Image 1: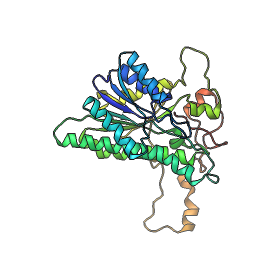
Image 2: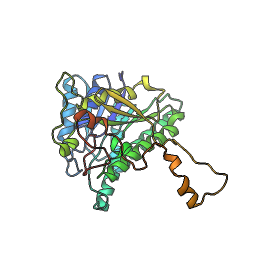
Image 3: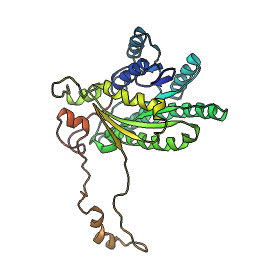
Image 4: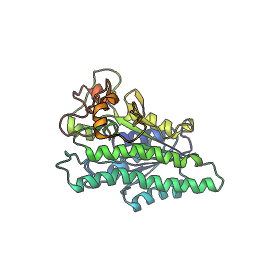
Length: 320
């Protein structure tokens, strides 16, 4: 489904990103495999993960090249996009997957822990998206049919919420909103922008939960490779009519998320007083809970982890 396309995939050295890179190549895409190679908290660097993925792709007669720079820095993002265009003469797909963790309850969280997570996730997504969007806009204004595709990585930590991840969750919720807005901005140029909220067994989840397992059978619902098919579809021509959407993907489950939609309202022909609101605010909730406590995410359900997302100690996100 991706024959002839050129894709850049960030955070593609391990886990979900690795699965995406391998499937993209299998489906005919030429791939720039980006990974700084740091630890789950963003420390350190290692060129081997990205290099190994490229070796796997080329061994299977695919076409790929490694990129080791930090895409949350302008120079790293610019060199990533430039590498694809200079090597293959075009750019068709950007998959933003790179991320880190710095979990802490908000009252214990440092400014550095907040900023570092925002930088890698939100700024990293922004920098690659900005450059790719500018490229496709220029091509479109020159009369070319661009058909660009951007697939961002959100999380149930942002869509539903997990205690102990106010930084990570805020960044991931921001990515969902960023996706919708950029989709509106780029629609006129033939570019689609969508996001996934994946659930899978990765080094991040196992750091917190230990070895996640599912009931024995032929299908491992928590394998990170399960996420790649939806991303490949969104990157293909078959998804040309889908943009600004957020999809949950866990195992064989694909969900369409739509958030922040009004569900009830109070109306008055003038300004409310605090006392009037106190008397009638219950009408907004009716049979709905007034204290936020989301249901367990699909990953928690499939792996048998108890508790709701809004309760319990700090935990790792459900994405790689």
